[in-house]
Length: 609
Image 1 (cartoon, rainbow, N blue to C red):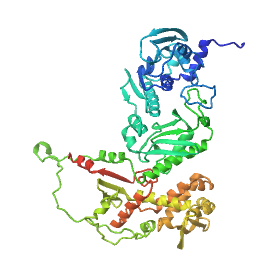
Image 2: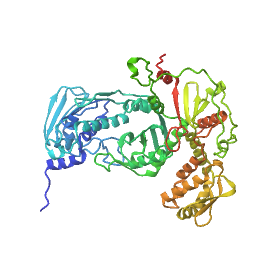
Image 3: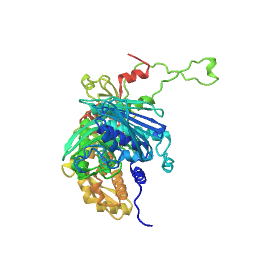
Image 4: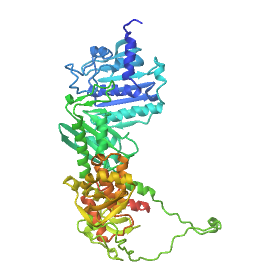
């Protein structure tokens, strides 16, 4: 078959296959045009998920007759002043959108400049242009797209339901609204509930817009990012580690004002939260990156959804550092949603009167008789061979006297601490504390696990972890393959304060252990490390898995569940939590404490102020 030149209409429809994937693709292109035109208010109206109607009205600069005629031609743009692709400062620049849309839909464009007496309207049907003709309108541009893919039924049948397409359009608008807080966005139509996000300016504008779009709870449970490194400026909000989602749909990335999906940024966020979240949980972030336009290529994807950084390592490093510094500054703070989940689990007791009408011959629940106010229950030390809390607390005695009691009224000064003062211990694992605003429940094992982990990291950063020799080496019997792995990894494990030697074909001798762990469960620790080596399948991975090894050691070296603590030990744990970054969640991503405000507790009992 000989080579032939394709007709213009077919060329446009092929180009539309790259640019116009679905109604949301059309909305994205048209909204970007409105933003580039300097619009301060944009109204989007849709019907049938955008399949039958997409109407975008803006108050931007508008177009005169010459620009209006050129706007629907292929590769015609006003956004590349010097014909250079390494200094792009606008959202749209390819000059294909309107021509591609006009080839697969009924396109109508009406526009008026500030100095024009009236507007002009141009129609495009299946690539055929008519007009322009005069039209009365205010300054700006109105674009209507009707019956998308009516002349390409093969494309139409692959679209999803109206609800799904409407949701995709909403997502596009959300991302552009998040990137442009100074623009007022209005969304409506017969296929959706209306949304109205007024423009916000000045200090805190970005946080206010994110609260509008994502929700107030995100703004309240996030830390502010503000960092500059290697020419990369990182801003936005990053959710607390205890404020997560089951998927990554609530992660938003913007580069020079453009919403993108980039593996470098996704990987950087995952690395920044690696110490704080479950593997199957995803933090909520709105990340804004500003770099020199010459350092990023946005022309690698027809829809401009992807990009390529010239120095991806510098961008990754800047993002990890910005999130890490912000989370560290947050200290022990945990998300308020944890308390809301707890409150939701409470139910008011329902007592029924013992009357013939409702007994039914069975038992009826009755409130227990009032037994009067008694002394707090005694708190004794527990197993004397349990891990020494004092070794990890810099001098606190880890063993308490039998039958020690908690003071009924602690010093008022303790109430002024953020995590308050210990009132009691419940189920030998949960510390009940009170501050000036409410009640706190602290998971002693999870909290101390984070404290030990952070101390491990600090010690390892300054050199090998200090160790303590065992009076008599502990011999642990293991399968021969596990002994071989531990023997090969022994030189690397010495950095962590764990000194092992082979003791026969099926045993390992533990001569020194990390001093930070005290009298921890060494047997369980060594077995756990052996399991990790088997999972990683490489001795070289020990260095790469530093955080995982430290986490295993911290877990075995922390105060165990079921250990009874004295009141001074509990208060010391609370003070250390306040002084330790990230102590609001354990190394597995679970919250270490829950705070219930006084008003929340009163609400449980139906009290109102």
